[in-house]
Length: 609
Image 1: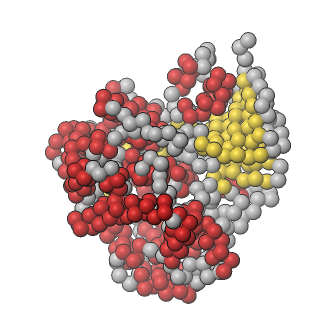
Image 2: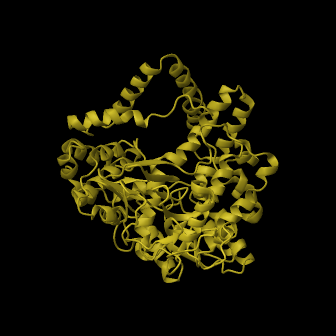
Image 3: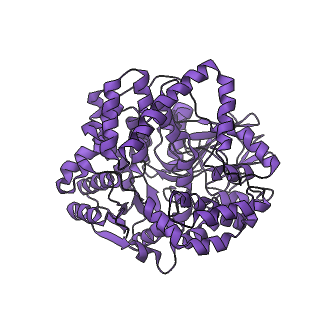
């Protein structure tokens, strides 16, 4: 007997007009009908909620034998769940939060999209769990503590994030990318629903013939992004954004859509000024372009002053200090009716080959391949040869192998030594509070990398791209900042099918042509023969960033003083931290970089303490 919908949503939820919702789920009766905080769809004994963007709707309609092409996204997900159960979740594509209440099993499932491009947070409150796309929505609920997570804030100052589920508020946690929360039997459990490289089995490397399908996979990812309204492409002069822009332009014209606008920032520093290439690419693709001067985007106020103001209104300290500039650029795009902006994010993670491949090559005795790999790095980066050699051959080569041997011989002693070394590298002014020091010592083990990865160091590093807190935090920040002006970012290189394809592509193929990102480099060199993209090296904004910090040094130093907010929390010794910042801001150097996270955290803590 075919189920019929008993209570469908009036309109399909395919936009993010508002995310002011909280989803409550009872721990004791998860299958019970949930009060009307959100619009639900029903399909037999199943009740569902879907929020965000669902890709591949036509394919899902076909696979679920749905005879109503206008049915809601939530109902489509319920139909898929009815057919194959929880195995339906990893097959969903898009940027979304989905909830399924199975009344027959008395179970509720709340999941985040495979790569976490849409946020999802939760808090346990007695006999229920509350979920929301915005952390602020949970903090405003009665009984939810607003206490700051002191250990997480202190560890953040030391670039350490041992728990990918925690936030900077003690009560609120995140559902990690590609994970689901399952409420059943009075318990809340979290686990993965999507994993492109399961740790319990060897990787299935693609054959040479299979790797030739890369263009097809990337085309499909870009098509998914183009189907959600007029688009722009955040176009730098780098390979990743140029490749997305080129594919998006070709695909849009092929399927009868307007090509994207090119959206670019022109940096005034010659070390990172890519305007010549940005203009040339937009011209060759025939794209209309907003090329905005950096100073014009900033307006009359300095960068870090605006960054601090923006940070204080967020539920986590601002991660990307350039956001005020890109917020101005996105505002222009929105005025031109472009609610969707594509980026090249994910290219560094999935197209490039981590230097830790050196350890695997040394372990297998493949010295000729190691020499080739080092040559690739030299041709692709601007770092001095000696620094590259130290990183590729020692830090990412011999040292991991030494650690592996010691781990097998003296695992407990080595772990204790690693924790001591980890904590010894922390600034002396962090965590003067003894109780906080003890908590951080217990947490330190969670920040240690695996010394004997079952499938090698290269794949261990790829897993970091999935599991690390920072990518999730970056997506959450984008969502929170740009939702205010009605902009959504979509990232073809973070498409699950692209990620799965590239994670199974042999490193020698990724480095085709003797340089990093060879899979797109040669294609782009043929597409834009006058830009020398086949020889391009990565451009960095480091020196410009340092000069801007130096320019604002006095105002920043005066604003934070001796860090009263962080001092009152026991997170820093205020006088020592103030002395460190004043010394670091004296000249634009590498040391000055470490002052910004501390200043940012102080001002954020004042706003939320």
